[in-house]
Amino acid sequence: MHVYTTGLMGKSTDNSTLDDAADMKDKISSSDIRNTSIVAKCAEVGAVEWARRSDPELEPYTIGLTGGIACGKSTVSKRMAALFNVPIVDCDKLGHKAYVKGTKCFEDVVNAFGAEIVGEDGEIERKKLAGVLFSDPETKAAKFETLNGIVWPRIAEMIKEEKMRLKREGATFVVVEAAILLEAGWDRIVDEVWLVLTSHKVQVARLMERNGFDEAECDKRISAQKPAAERIPKCHVVVPNDGTAEELDPLLTKLWPHVVDRAPATLLNAPAGSLRQRWKWVAVDVLHMSVELASDWWRVIHDKHCEGHRHYHNLSHLSEMLFYADQFELSRPDSLFLAIFFHDIIYEPTLKDNELKSAQLFRDFAAEVNAAYEPTSAGGATNPLTGGPPLCKEDVDEVAAWIERTASHMNGPAEGDLAYFLDADLAVLAREPAGYGARGGRLSCRDFWTPTSCTSTTGRAPHGKSARAQT
Image (cartoon, rainbow, N blue to C red):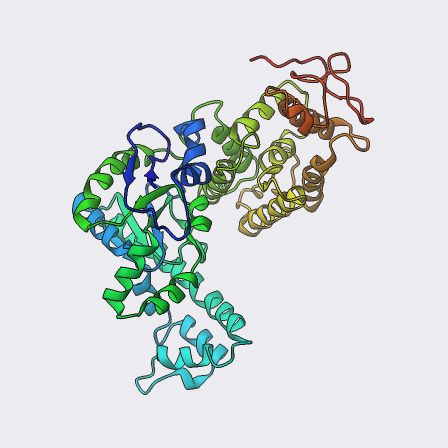
């Protein structure tokens, strides 16, 4: 079996492979990796829609490096440091500092788990804390959730602080190494995620040599972690690491130029007419989001729509819907654009509640926007289209309802912007391949549907005037 590593935006045709991984316990094939990771779908759209999360004036471009136990994360980060002079932020070390005496995190942990976890030196003793966490199997999960809820946000703050310090010292790139990068949500504070992948056989061998475990204990430790198959879809680059440190060098040397190419892309330098330029208009110009928050949410939208299992609910789908939207005379283009960006943000082909989950994620987005909203001294930074706050309750409820309505496009009345939104979605789904028609209300046309060019098996009449696809 081969494990492939692909450049994020597909600019390169040279794939590096790792042989001798046939016994990989997770049974992940090369096609599994390419078809489920974000990287495969990024290549279809190209680099034009990529944008970093970090502010290039304040932070270095950041690679989040993660992987399972004994996969060799530290080996990879050390080789990157040696080859490219990149500083490393070790989140394990930050974790030890997060709750030292005198910090609020220290107080919160002690209040949650009792003064008995504090040692004679006044610091929290990790063994005593572990004793409390593991004391009762029935409450262990809840206790860990409490601890993580206290410590993980503080570590995230420390990561940001370290990145800003390194930027002031002249760093343009940084690697953040964290075993729990995805679990802790720290992928939201890095620009791209690299996954170090190792075969089960090599993981066991490394654990036996490094920790002195027998094979049964190794299997127990490995199986307790999230399997690689669940990590891959959330990562941008997969780094196979069954060999020696020196054998990593050719692969890393191939990958690094693509990192350098990606780093300059920001939300603010988006090409005219691109999706991220449209998002910038809605997020920054209309909703007055900070560039940092708008960039973060653009990457959520981007990466969700680049998931490997998506064949039509992808970035191209959004682009075509916006093309149709441009043909309409809209009352609230901001609301329609938000509905387009979020209506398929959650998509699992086997589930029936994608629309509800997408609407909920939009509500989470709106809550975050409003929580960060700070009116200016010049009368308040209001929505220029409404004169009100960025996202008032009525607007949020309306857009969420539109998103939920895509579960049954044709059922029930629709007028104005809602009808335009539903028509645009169906117009894209009804395009080639002809099978999309079955997914889009069982329409019989392949172009933008109109009263004369398309018939539907359900009752709502199309709202759009005769604007046909220009492709």
